[in-house]
Amino acid sequence: MTDGADKGREPGGWELLRAVQDVKATIADMSRGFVPIAVFNLLAEDVKEARAETVVVKIEVDKKIEDARKEAASAAAAIRTELDNAKKTRAQTWTAIGLLAASGAVGLFYNIFTRGLGMGG
Image 1 (cartoon, rainbow, N blue to C red):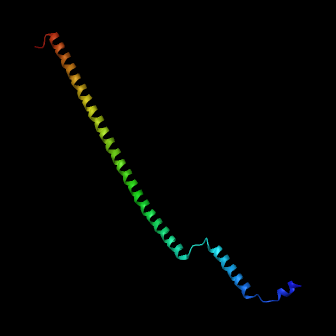
Image 2: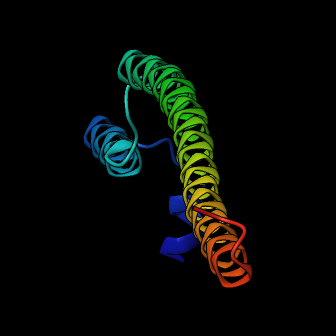
Image 3: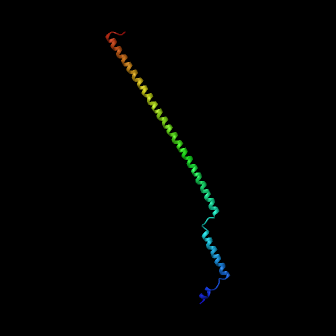
């Protein structure tokens, strides 16, 4: 019978105070993991700035990489040119040596031939 009598009765002051404290404690427990909106906004702003800085740094690094590639390509082209010039110089040197040897051989055979026939001096 006490259950029926308790259902129709208004809660007292202490019961209301305990209920309010329970609600406050529940809200405090729930909000313990949350961040205030001002802190969230500051964090979001910092993240945006960090991303912008990252993009700027990435662009600078990409530009430096591209410059290094261009420099390496021009250096490789210069090395190829130097190697080609060295090959040409070597070929010219051996050609000159060959022509000198051929002219010496022709001169030697000419002298042998003309002296052998008694035509030379």
